[in-house]
Image (tube, rainbow, N blue to C red):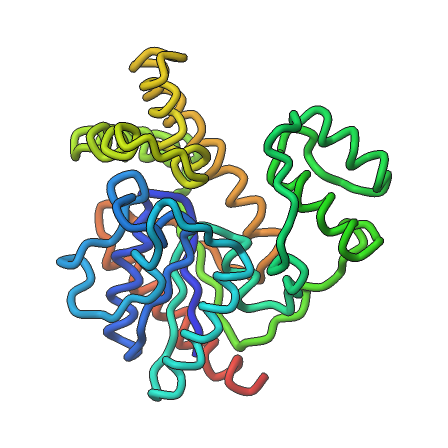
Length: 301
């Protein structure tokens, strides 16, 4: 059995995953694109050794911040972990908020072309890249400000000679899985929870964590694009004030949570649970009851 636990930051994904791993004799696979990097701990709310409570975790701290790690790499590694865990007769719990990581691991996502050397267009502006994409592929449905997806769409078109928007792979589930989403009933309460989590990260030493890599002049992708790191790099560069950086981290985290909810709802057959902050045991019981009612069904698929 494969359980997927996802949702925005600060809602109890880690806590629930440990409880369920004990209950269902499972090992955990990380599905957060930044937690694969060593040293990026506070800004990613990475599970601590104490929090693991002896449960085996995979794909955490497997790369240095200067290493390249792509969606293709994760797909390959995650599927190898799934095979390894199931061979031991254990269940699998996938935990994280990076939707494409989860989908690439469990669905028929063909990422072979992405394993080839792709043009990165470092010297080309996002505006010019988008114009190039529309010239090559008028059918492309990509946000004109999303540089990463624009580049991916250009590379996909050049590799396949067809629009990425016509790519229908990734819609077939390859593994039997139960998708569980954690959220909060009141959206404003969720946003306040996210704001509080950012304040907790600052108090726990996020500034020093980011400054360490900044002083080493490391400007790799996770440090210049991940929320909590890119904003502080702008602050250290003198482009924004400290207060602006913190506010941007909160704003970007809230916006990311909103995009996560939309992606998970549209892409997965997911059951959402509103977290009971006053009594997390109630949330655990609700999720466990849902799993018990559905685990026999997925075993017959």
